[in-house]
Length: 121
Image (cartoon, rainbow, N blue to C red; front, side, top):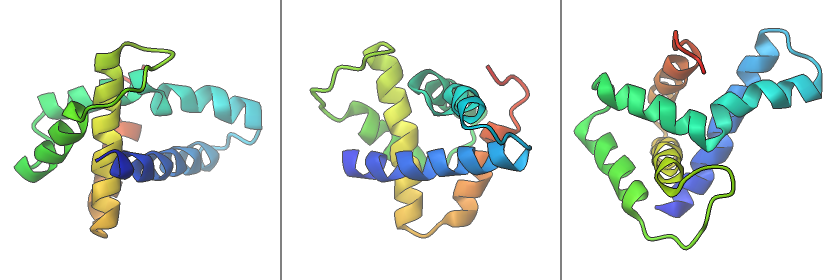
């Protein structure tokens, strides 16, 4: 599961970077500052919980999220609590899983939901 999260992390961050560039942000420092609310564990956990609350995911997708979230890991996050980190890992694993299955349209729906979310942090 953590391998899927590793893959998903890079894909997720690429979508966010592409979005920020598309809205006209050209300075690297500003790109980095704006991306943090999306790619940091707190942001990822926030969006995942919001999507779960809105029944956004299929049962199969929820299983992937739960498996990744519950996976034993000795990593201690620096900037958030372990629960937040595990939720973020669940979202990253789902993105990696969908990418591995070549379900790009579903990834795009998830990313559009996150990017277009009304209550961006």
